[in-house]
Structure formats: C-alpha cells, structure tokens
Length: 355
Ligand code: ATP
Ligand code: MG
Ligand code: FE
Image (cartoon, rainbow, N blue to C red; front, side):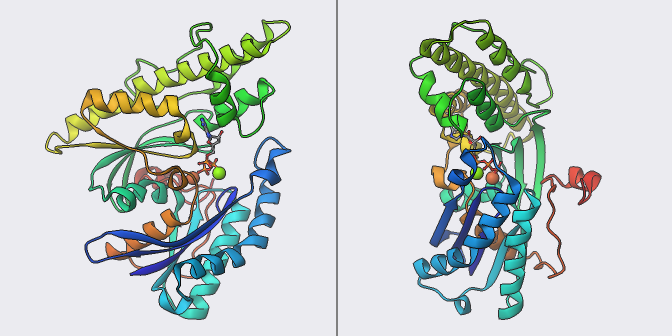
C-alpha cells in the first residue's frame, strides 16, 4: 500500500509518500517539510493567519515535490491522508481541503488523520514497535503521556494543566531576551550555567495523577530575572541551567510513575517501551534524563530521528496506512477539520468536535 500524506496543522507545511508492506514494515518514499519559522520569528510565536496563508502558497508544490522524490504519480498512490485536527483551524482547512480535492479528482479514498495519532504511531514506522507502549509527546502545543494500545486505541494518562513544555521553553527564552524558538536558545545557554544556583518549582512532583504544570516555572524564572540587576550573560546561563534542571526533575518524577503504572497493567510485556515525540525531544539533557529513567525501569527508550519527532507528513501518511491496514473505513469527503480533537476516545466523547 502507498499513500500520500499532508500535514498543515501548525507552522510546518509538509507532504510525503509512504509505503507499507504486507508484514507491516513502512518505508518513506519521498518527503518534504517547509518550516515557516522565519515568517513567525519576528512575532515570537506562530501567527495563525500568516500560517494559513503560507500553507496555501506552499502546499501544491510541496505535494508535487514529494511525489517527484518518491518517483510516483498520483495514479500510483492507493489513498490520501490529511491531518484534520487538532491544530490551527486555518491551516487544517488548507490541508484537508487539498486532500479532499485530490481524493475527489482521483477517486481515491481519503483518511482524515488525527495529528496526535501521527506522533503516536511514528515509532512503528521507524522501529517496528508492537503495541502496547507509552508515548511522551512534548512539543510547542502539547505535553501528553499516552498509552498506545493499538490503532485508534489510546488512553491519555497525563496532560499539562497549563502551558505545554515547548511553550514554557519559548516563554522562558522570551523573558530572558533570547531568540525564538526558545528551546534551542535555552539549551545552548544552559550549557555554561550553574543548574544549582536557583531552585525552581517542580509542580505536581510526588502526586499520583500523571499531569504536568509548567506555568509556575515560568513565573519563577521571571522573578529570578527581576531579582538581579543588571542581569549578566552568566546570570542568564544560570537561570537556563536551573530551569532545565527543574524540567528534567519534573519529567523524571511524572514519567517514572507512568512507567511503573505500565508495568503494573502489563506485567507480561517483556520489553516495554517509552517513545518520545515533539520538538522538545531535541533537548539533549531531557533525552539523557529519559534514557536514564528507562534504563532504571528496564524500558526501551525510543527517540525517532528528530525530523520525525517534529511535525512532518510521513507520520500522517503512516497513520493513514495503519488505519487502512487495520480495516478502518476511509472518511466521508464531508468530514470537517477540528481545531480540538483529543486522541483519547473518552475525552473525545466528552469534548465532541467543538471547543
Ligand atoms: P505541535 O502542534 O505539534 O505542538 P509545534 O510546532 O508547536 O507543533 P514542534 O515543532 O514539534 O511543535 O516543536 C517546537 C517546540 O519545540 C518549540 O516550543 C521549541 O522551543 C521546542 N524545542 C525545539 N528544540 C528544543 C530544545 N533543544 N530544547 C527544548 N525545546 C526545544
Ligand atoms: Mg512546529
Ligand atoms: Fe506535532
């Protein structure tokens, strides 16, 4: 099976052609991602209207490019998969409508894919992982610990009650006068800083529920910065290092509990695995923390290549292929994009498709 995937939910425009063989092995035949980072950096964050326009301008040629790289034409693909939520509604409309138009014109089935399902299933494309496993998604828009039981079968164990982790990095950077996106800048500064200088809060650490909270951390960073006059480069480095230390300790506690819960629920899974996804997965200290935690709990730690951790269309194509292979019916061309769309079936029922 071969599928064309389209991703436009945030600030990356992406298209990919991915194949899946009878044994369930996946292969990326051609992919292309266009980041809008430059368009948004002057504003210190993603501007929805700019994002939607940029998707419109780029998407058609990116699809052609992905097909070209794959050496395929639209006739060769079996289906179209497009992200239909969650995300910025303007971008979702662009991607989903384009997917629908191609499906209508070629008569091929359309799969409306949940962006989070794309992140959740990526490790099966890269590492052939079997169900069940745990996935930690840490990006600019999401912070979730999810039990991946099967295709379309997810249980959200924890989520942030305020800021996403990537957002906390971005806001911290902004407070300290560092450039956007904040994650790489904070990580760079932290290298020369003293992580012991400030003791920043570690919200929810010790609690049985597996949720996260990062807004208090940001406030503490602001107070620390305001308490020093003038703030030197070394002060900024110390704050960054202390911030990263607090995040690292928080993840260790929260995820550690998740690994224990997994063990209790699935004592028969021989080598359980934790998969990480999202842009924050680029952070070397956080990766090392998760790796050490997994070693301690005898879990496999799987960090797919960064290009597949951040937003991309290969994961959307793959999720479509997984849905096809699992026997899910294609979506009706009347399917609507949803800015909110939790992965968890129970949460999805409560929230419905609206806000
Ligand atoms: P989504 O809709 O999936 O949440 P997004 O565009 O917000 O999409 P990603 O592109 O996956 O998320 O990741 C971007 C985030 O990752 C930003 O918040 C950025 O600061 C953060 N990030 C990138 N590199 C690092 C790093 N080295 N350390 C920490 N955070 C990082
Ligand atoms: Mg992004
Ligand atoms: Fe994403």
